[in-house]
Amino acid sequence: MSVRKVSGSVKLLAGVWAGVLVVAVALAGAWLLRSPGMNEQVAIAEPSESELQVVGQTKVLFGHNSVGMNILDGVSKVYADASMPAPAMADVSGPEISGASMTDAEGATMRHAYIGVNEDPLSKFAAFTELVDSPAGKDIDIALMKLCYVDITASTDVQAVFDAYVSTMDEVEAAHPDVRFLYTTVPLTADRNWKSKVKAALGRDDEMGPADNIARERYNAMIREKYGATGRLVDIAAAEADGTGERSQDGSTYYVLNKNLTFDRGHLNEAGSEAVAAELLKMVATHSPVA
Image (cartoon, rainbow, N blue to C red):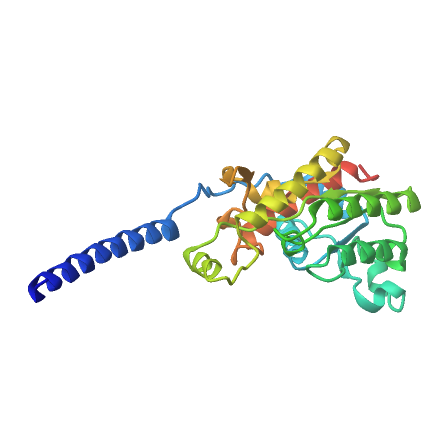
C-alpha cells in the first residue's frame, strides 16, 4: 500500500472519530442542559388569622435539624405577613433537655430541639423519644419530629427506617396519651443542575439525585398510606414539590423540591420556608386543644 493511501485512510478514520466526538459532545451537552420538568412559582396558602391565634396559644414541641430551622424561620415570616406577633420560641437542645435550664422554654409556646445525627435516622428517633420524655416535653399539646433529606437516600433500607419510625411513634403516643402527635414526610431535593450532573458522572455522588428521591418517594408513600387517614400528616414533601411534575427514571416515579423554594437544592429559601411553615401551622391549628 502506498504512503498516499495510508495517509488517506488515516485522515478518513480521524474524520470519523471527530464526527463521533462531536455527536458525543452534543449528546452530553443536551443531557447536561435538559430540563427534566416544570418548576413553577408557588402560591402559598396562608393560614387564617384565627388559625394563627390558635397556634399562638398551643404548646408545640418540634424535633428537627437544619431544614427544620428553615421551617421555623418560615413560621416567623407567616406571622409577620399577617402583622401578628409570632409565637415565643425556645431552643431546648442540649442541656435544657435534661432540665438544667428550662426557664425560657416554660414561657415559650413553640419549643424545638436539634435531634440525633444527620444520615442516622435511628439516632433521631431515639433522641425524639428522649426529648418528649424530658422536662422539655412537660405540658405540651402537640409534638412532632422530622427527618432530613440526607436521612433517606438510594443506599437506605427504607423499610427498616419506616418500621423504626412507626415503632417510635407508637411508643411515644402510648407513653403520652394527652399529647397529640403529628406525622411528617421526609423532605426532597431539587433536580440536579449541570455541575452536579458532571460531579455525579465522575463518581462524586451528592445523594441528591433521581435514585435518592426515588427512595424518598418510597418512604413517603408508606408514611402517607400509614398516617394519611389520621388527618395529622404534615406532608412536607408535597409542599416542597408543589409546582413541579412527576419525574421518572428506570421505571420508577418520583418528585422533587421545587427549585424556586430552595437556595442549594436541599435547604429552603424564604419562599420554601414559608410554604412548608404554612402547612405546619394549619395542621397545628386543626389539632390544637385550644381550637
